[in-house]
Image 1 (spheres, rainbow over the protein chains, first blue to last red):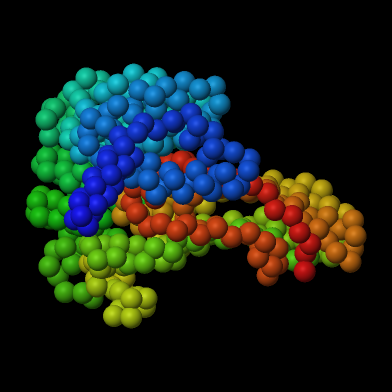
Image 2 (image 1 turned 180 degrees about the horizontal axis):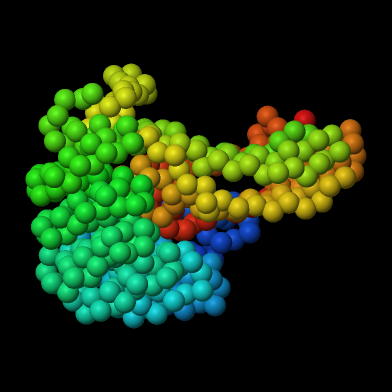
Length: 272
Length: 191
């Protein structure tokens, strides 16, 4: 009898749990509460969002997550810019943390691309960053757009697009060409810096691009020099081997004590 | 009345994988106010962040060991002076009341959350009035991201504080992307 009651209770709990997971989120209501002028309503929405909705969306079954996306992406069309930012932030974390985000977010691609031009800076940034974070691979169709956006003068757009192009470089020679131009000493320092961060952040192995880091060690801009050396340090192995001469020259001429010491360490020379 | 300032702090501790950041990203802004509320020159400081290797955390779970050899993922791995170029403010009033608005974004270069992690962000307005000179009053309107911790002061008086209760990469990324922004207002008298 006790065993029977226990089994029933377990079944009820399992059913309740399944319902809790599969129940779709009312995104309009969630964002309305999150933006409420009443702090208690805000706090309750934040507790639910951070404790349940967002982590679940990033971890639960792909089919369940996919079913959430059309209603979520529809919030990007709201006139209230604050709601669009909220929705774009959710799409960004889904893109970043779900290993199947390219498939899960397929129905949101058009909206993400549209709102790369959103008037709100944070929304623009979230949309381009979401495209650049799609996993396991960024869809091939996105490459022309990311290449175009990599040249965007908007400082919140180009870094995300360049990171996306770098993620696509192992499969697309065109992406390597673009990155090679970005890493040229002829490019402005901000583009160099975004390119270097992308190379380091994606664990780049393309020898042509790794060699570019060595060239940037003699750039006029000290920020670029520093970023290039830190990227070489982070990538290590081939990045050091390919750029040994440039690192030696840097170690001999740099006035930055910290960076000079790092360069010597990369060469296997004793700390001075 | 003294200075009003906003402090923004990351309190993440060193974790157990790779190079991680330490607990102190601080950012302060000050505006000088005399007894009759002079409008002073704002001061912006994006602060310094330190990244630590995974071996930096001592056995007490709190103390961080440091050294002076950087970029080796051992004890202190790097120290950054953060960029304050995106910190702004405006000031109006004088005499009996002054209103100061501070807003901005600051990136955390030690972030271990990925290349495309947005920076922290805030937009706050202090209004201080000496209509009753014995009890100067303040109003503080705030809007900020839900990560990291934020505090507001008038002189040494803490008038607002927020500390996130989570430390999960998903939640942190969501907050820094502008999700679940915290906004409100608080009023009181200056001690």
